[in-house]
Length: 332
Image (cartoon, rainbow, N blue to C red):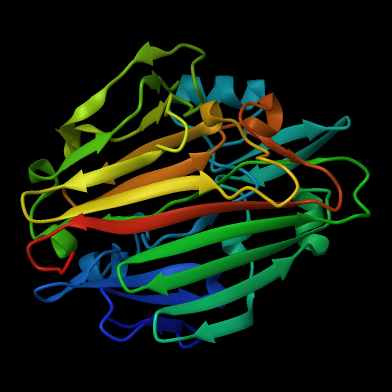
């Protein structure tokens, strides 16, 4: 499968993982191969699977400074009436209404490679971007973003760091996440209804037709697993501290996606366990499933729910980890 000309390839000798990161495409985790009994494509790619212009593109793009949709009450009501929400909505801050695309704008920015580090046990690339005139029209803060992708022999981390400028007049509110898209047949060799998902959630937040939370919650347990094709458009939360993960399971292979805030040297964390969620989206017919790890909830720029508020001069660090828990094809 082809990747962008600017993509950075990461691998280590005798390692399980091989990754490609595209700085010019929003520091996109563009391709990921698991070396098992044979090379297995982990990430769904629309062009490879469908050869057409329509539909979700796949890969694993960053979501920042918003996850999901950002809508005023008027936009949300209109979306409820139509049964769908606009891709770009608005939020109000300091009396000013500003637009915000679905999932923010970090994935649409061009990043650059700031650092590269390869050893016998890990391969790492650090990509960087910052605010500019276009971003400040959407989000009135100065910042530096870093995407740090590290391939180890048995697992991979994909981290997102935010540093707020000392010149900001107030704390920066944001949510963060990743829209990782698993190629289910490519990785597991099975359709979506043959792969189970387990996750230690305790709560589900139902969605309105406009894709915002409807304000209710219900108890939910997925400890025994559920087939992927039954899990689309669900927001699950209520994770025990240090146990925010979702695992895709078959008899032969188990892939775990985990998320956490990496504490800084001067404080425990900027977030709370209740602010972490997994959001599931997929299309069984096209063979993809997205176990999206989110810190924060849809519309957080309007509601504040789950948003980090980063003071001027401070740094925040969030990390997603991919790990094969068990497989007869891999050495433990």
